[in-house]
Image (tube, rainbow over the protein chains, first blue to last red):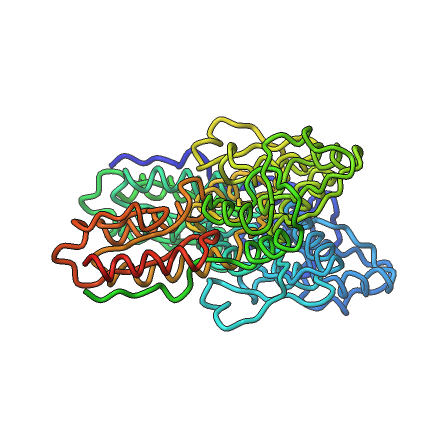
Length: 275
Length: 275
């Protein structure tokens, strides 16, 4: 069986940057998981003494708090600063962007629609910057029967599929006077998705590696599954089932933006050994 | 044969307003045809002494110049005012809107894309307000290979089909950081188009009445023809051919925003007599 990696996969700029920041800030704690990959977080804890807490109130004056790639709500960031916590911001600049857009558009009187997952930390953070509130939607159906202002600003979670974003934009544009569409889906997401689209049309089995709570990995899996029904989303080599590979000829591999190379390499080696 | 008018058709707010302004300004001249309907222009000339000139330089100090519904280029309006011509502005407010948007967006540093017909007077006028220039397109193909700024403002000719506008918006949004989509297609256009869409699916012959150079009438004809292959665009009853109606059971009728009721009535009466 041929095993091939997608042309683009794995760590994006924002994740690489955040890990570098964490490695440079030993004896710190991240507030929430730095990235959506437990194995990498364990490595940072073990090798760099970067802890993890789920409550921003547990930081005391002088403590070092590393802000996760997905960002945090505006009021929590303010509280940390007010409590003299040493804030080290590892928010991905592609996430800071929609936060800023929400704040500016709110102040300019636009109704804000955020396309994404309301429960995802990135969106919790982004939404908090909309001074006058924002509505989070996953598809145009969420907007049916909703009455909005005539000026709308639309932003997207950085890791979403552009086709789904366009579905929401296409619903809004004919119905309102001005729709200001900000393309906040990040380049790495675009490129990784494009590469998965390409390889999954050729492969007869696809393995997508990444945290189960990783939004961008889930999108990669969804695109892969559209083209190749034998697609599997795994966290690491332990999730592999060798029966999947029986009679397969071409195994395509991709990985989410928060999946480190060493995990990808372990998966490739395991498939090679097992198949 | 059943003859039925579309639920919405004919004169729009802007045309009604312009005709009223012209009727109130006898002994004036319009610069370019007030609306795209020769019969109505003849009536205004005959009954209200509203002349017509194709050269704005022919107006002298003290002359009364009525500005057409489609608007005119900014510099020509300025020249008229500088030459102390008495300017009576009958520009449709729905056209003034995209003119203003072009000016504001140009000043805010956006690249401006106008969806419409470069040769149409409305678009010549609208484009002239884009201080730093604008690109006029009729479909996304016109944008292929074109490099634009990361901030784009998109406006539409008031009389265009929204599906075609969305095609251009859908090309731009995934490719640029911010696309500010202004829905400048006017309500009357929307409503007349929606009504034609509805009736043309039921009719076995469709008659669309309006000036041959009327953009909105052409769009109505295009929608009608998509649903009913026996669709005809006529200017008045003299263009009717009674052979069209042989064996037909349901004749649907619509008319462009610049088609006066008396022409529509003449057409209906002629069909009734002839068929």
